[in-house]
Length: 403
Image (tube, rainbow, N blue to C red; front, side):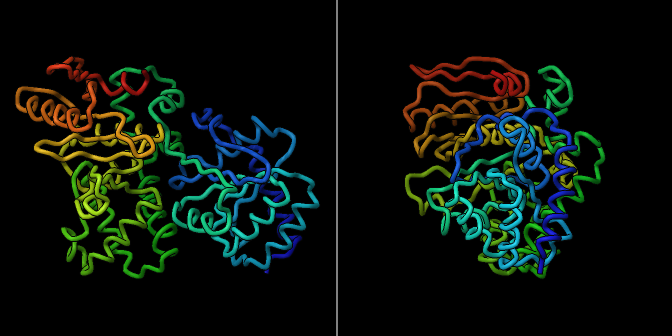
């Protein structure tokens, strides 16, 4: 049981820490997070990507004189139950604010009913969480039509430049590709931080929440997927590896890794949903710093690293992403509301050995989707390729991101 006095003490100490915390660089999402009384604004993303800092930026920008912050992972709130939320409600009313910032509230069973009560009383509630599934499941059940959802990613290339005080060019882009965008890692440059974060996500966000006993098999699978960004994977092809005998279990692990924002899976574009589900999916990671510090791979892998950056940028722009497979392959089909909109091939270096494969695969996709323009994202090359009325523009990745 958590008494009202404990809630009061925790809120006071957290409020002080919250106010003293550095707001850091302004996140690109700051002015895009929806807000309206009677609605919950959900901010989800990988652990330690800056969600609570974004909350602080929102408070200082839009609510400088009010607002209550509470992180439910505070050890003093260990064992909190839904019945305790009545005393929290009493404490909130006593503080006379209508703006609430809740961090990781989904660890409390019945949280969505509590939040729904607050929304009916016209509170504005900001909620952050590091597990997409746990948030969306409860939201869909109890908060349908009364919430907005926003995904926060680690720093983009532009945010990285601002944080590091660098100029946009090929050198700074290479540094970004090596270090990724986790704020605390960029601040400390302590490599073990990313090893510990990787384990923290596997244990706290997956193993404990889903009652997984064989954590070693989960870790081996996660490291394997992490080490194979840009490659195809399926549950059937991995069945029997790492001591996991069931493809159903592997599919569950895929889902857990995705919901924890650690690994992403890009499906084949097909008008048949069954074919999308049946075909292998391409693997990407949410942060390249985590990739570099936890992978088991010894090749530079520049092409797939570049692919990963392009994928993340498309996701930041709100695109749903697929790959295309015909006689050739196109790396990314970016869609808006389910409709194919932009086509991208990614190639670190276009040369005599790969030019036909890269260009022809993209031309094939352009004809299939009836598009007259597409892009090849490169490390440092600029070029134009034409065929009939079709135009492919090759552009360095750092220039494409900032344009």
